[in-house]
Image (cartoon, rainbow, N blue to C red; front, side):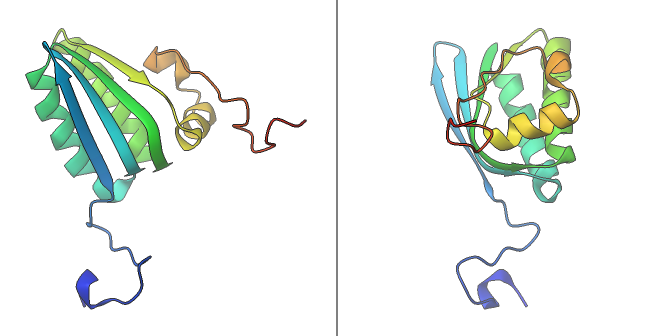
Length: 131
């Protein structure tokens, strides 16, 4: 059975890339918008694309605003690309952390290790701004 054989719009098969990487570039700088899932099912594909982009640009900002799901592999990828960028003399900034990204980074206490400012949206805790 293949993904095409399955029924329903919500069907999902490991190996089917559920992460879009939208690249915007300007004068040696790059904005990479990640949209979708940063999970173990796609870690190798995401890693390969990250590495290609790191080799191409001196400065890279990665927007995590539209990351809908992240597991331990996704967090490991963020650590890896930060270390690789440093080793290559590149400037890499992680920005616009989505609630799933913030939750995982908080769970593993990784904010300090990644070193980028994180802004927590007012309604990130799901209370809609009410306490």
